[in-house]
Length: 573
Ligand SMILES: [Zn+2]
Ligand SMILES: [Zn+2]
Image (cartoon, rainbow, N blue to C red; front, side, top):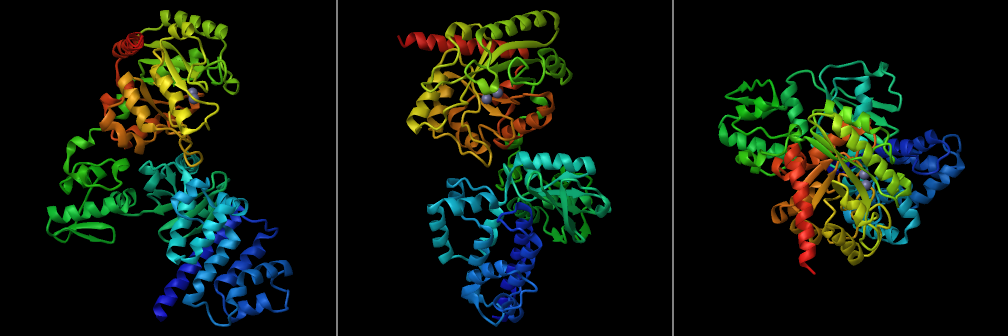
């Protein structure tokens, strides 16, 4: 019992320490004096005779009376002169929550749009239903759950993690991602990186990063701009193996080790190193590591669990970055893009692409500076002129046309007919009921002039759930009509998402396109990476992805899609 108490108190202390930092950075509650608040926290987490005296006594030298009052209210139930005991821990949790906001299971988080401590705090104060759910939860609260859930609430969208990583690379170019960023998980916490050599971190001016602390194994930073905790592991020897341990999920690593034991009877793991017949396994790359243990090389983004990849080489045959020859969703400075058509063409040619589709917004989208018909015609004339002078590259005339509330499109058929490629997307009025929203998208999928539906689910990673739609019905219909489904590489979107793609890809065999939805050339690298990684995480192959087609194949395909859809439409009359 003694021991258990000690352990739980240790955990309490851990949590309290973390929360102290969080409060400091997120400014969760209106504390005028953060250092006093931290002091109060110290007093709380090592709750003993001394703390009791400070909080409930008359001496005001350590805590102001207002802070005392807060603590008194919180700890009315734990007015004890003994050290915090097991039975008191739940009260302690409640107290922590009252102070900082806490978290619950995924469903409750999603329902209340909670993606971090700040939104938890807001929901607690403004949503009665959420407050009640929390109070119920605390009745059966277990300390460990609280701890885990806190971490869940702190996850940040991968776009923020990428931004944060890029900023850190400016300070230290040799940083490499591990953990959830390397695996391309949508929500990341903390951002985990590795570094080969030990730098003197204290001397670096981290600008937006707060330096928290360091141990012999890692340093901890906090990115105040992206609200991201960053853990940089310092690896001095056996870099490949040590890094490997930080790359996969626990489940992947367990399967790896179990299977390695089956392959080599004398296989041993000791302090994150591998041994066979008591000799340390020497490897020069991760590929080498997998091969030496008798496995297929498994890409980091597939190291999430499941043993199918170890056994079946075919499963690993996913689309490659080098398969991509085009971008089908690009905005120019005719609408809200930042680059001229000429700049875009030069840029994509320099990337080795064969073709792009220029898809500015349609007339109704004033926030995206949508093109009226005259402007669209002017742009198309320019494209025709440019195409005459470029070799081995083609600009297709397209548009990202808004799907209006009734499912009709924002340009008349006469205009759509003259475009090579039409994306239909929803940007406005997306909170219709499920039936209305589904039929709206169904009408667009069936529209003979529409080649592709842009960001079909409308979700924003970590912020907005998918539209209220029947995704299964939509993907089935899109497959019947050969309407392409976009994988939008905007890191805030990643839409359609990889779990939905995985769920339906074998059933409906949809055509997919990986696009950047580029508004500025500067966005290209991240968005290209994000779109292809989403496809890879969805196990899509080269021939599932339209952008892998050569120019003439693509040209044929888009003509076929349109003529087949027109025939289908006419046969219905
Ligand atoms: Zn869009
Ligand atoms: Zn767009």
